[in-house]
Image (cartoon, rainbow, N blue to C red; front, side, top):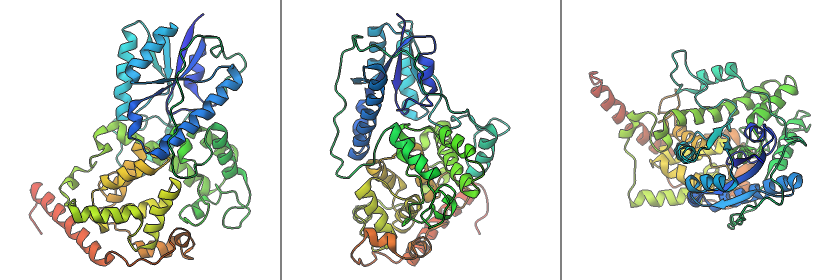
Amino acid sequence: MQRSVMWFRRDLRLSDNPALLAAGADGDEVVPLFVVDPTFSSSGAVRLAYLHDVLSALDDSIRSVSGAGLVIRHGDPTAVVPAIAHELDAAAVFVSRDYSPYGRRRDLAVADALRGSGRELRGIGSPYAVAPGGVTKGDGTPYAVFTPFSRVWRKVGWDAPFPHPDDAFRWRGAGTAVDAEPMPSRPEPGIELPSAGEEAAQRRWQSFIETPGAADGTLRSSVEAYDDLRDRPALTGTSHLSPDLKWGTIHPRTLLADLDATGDGGRGHTVFSSELAWRDFYADVLFQRPHTAWENLNTKYDAMVVDTDAAARERFARWCRGETGFGIVDAGMRQLAATGWMHNRVRMIVASFLVKDLHLPWQWGARWFMRHLIDGDLASNNHGWQWAAGTGTDAAPYFRVFNPTTQQQRYDPSGEYVARWVAEAVEPMLDHAAERDEALRRLDAVTSASRRSDGAAPT
């Protein structure tokens, strides 16, 4: 009997999974595998607990159709995957391609090890509507600014969703001998996590796209009202699908196809699909320039003076605790601590505050987010931070500085969001106007030095 291995990673679903379908396309018996990588230990407890819940849901789904569940192995995938392929005499291991810096290195090593025993690693599809590298300028070079990227992204387009495995699909039988290892332990997240898995993701999406009666009291669906509500953190104006996209319990092409199928939803549909384009854009930037995971895309800003002394550490601690005295900043940080999630508009505000008001390295904030977010994703998180810092993928100059007071007045005019998370009054820890001037002074020092190095006369 021919066997293949389906190695699940960031595609923890059965529907719309081309790698899974390819694994069973020749009538092979498919063994579903998940490897608990030691590198997972660097993730926060919240994300690891949610991953445990997603894996449990996937295991249940596979058991319901095969009688045998997900095969769990613990260890370095470069050793574990070739070993199980040998153990099962599987000719091929199928995966959804991983474009992250670590994932690419890991998969090259796994492919080399498999090749040494006459087997192969076959990458089919990706976690993105358009895989990284698929959107380029006319001369083949990558984009570093979103708007032109998004125009070409829409022209390139994406596949229609793939079907669910049918009754002819051959899963490994319950009697197939495979050494069992336990599901990864579930750390205590300290918070209530959202429901996890493919069915939960579909429920969230269907509610967002179909349910009449948006948060603004109209009879529009939430997606139709998305452009009007998405920046209002007190309202339920976003899909909350970011953890599902992170772990692949739903694929973006499913969302895009459903948007098309529901007809002209107006600007809400367009703006929501643009958020999926941002996700693809950040993945593409990281793929093309892997060093930008933790380094500035715009290297000119490597010379920007940031504070890292003991006083800076104390300011960072106050930011982490949500004790800055600026309501919308503190509300965002406390929402993150209490739920593992933060509204996207507020993410931008708290990021700007850390970089432009506190003058701290954006990497400090990015690491804090990755430790506490359920949806922590290296490309989206770290390039979002660079956007806020003005050092990355943004055509706007560095001198954009969010005023947390006016941002709160504009996006939480009733104060409902802030009141939900911040009960007490805290004296502001700084004068925003003065710190804005300091941020611009530091910017001027960098730009002046850059002009001199380019040979321009100082002004």
